[in-house]
Length: 215
Image (spheres, rainbow, N blue to C red):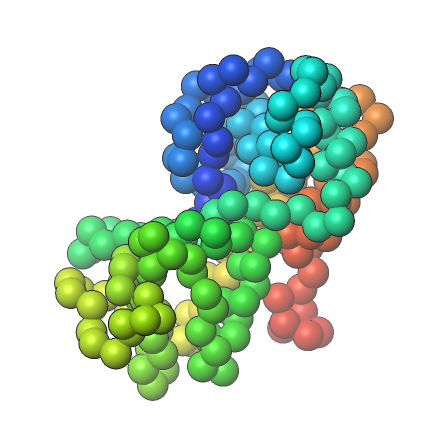
């Protein structure tokens, strides 16, 4: 069975005080969905606020939660560290996004149906190949300086015909995440909820139909 999640790489929130957050370690991959707890939503929002802030925000005086979210809304384009994680429960193989991959680019996987391979990050560097009507994924081995050989270990194989359905599921999960973000924002940053949801929806490209005409 294949499980594909939209994941966000969390930051170290041990000293974060602007709103309640779950006790999770840094660099954990948090799967975004409508099933997250309020504290996990708090971690997700803290991660996005921190990642999209500049160095002066981190080094200066403590900024209140409303100011952090307002700055997130006002940023040119929200970047979300993470991407799509693919797990094969049968083989036990997991392919996670590498460093510097961004969840905001999750729709680039649609290009696989035309043979266009998205960048999946580095360190590790996931490897992806289109072989006929099958997409093959390896956890590592995609470094462009040495990508001619076949990586060790079995790949995850995704039939190209299944890609649209898989990405619709990802879209549904992200839509559920947006619903929880709105509830969280109404409680913690009153007045900013509509703008926050609209910003994340636009920059993470969540609600737009996957294919033209909604097909």
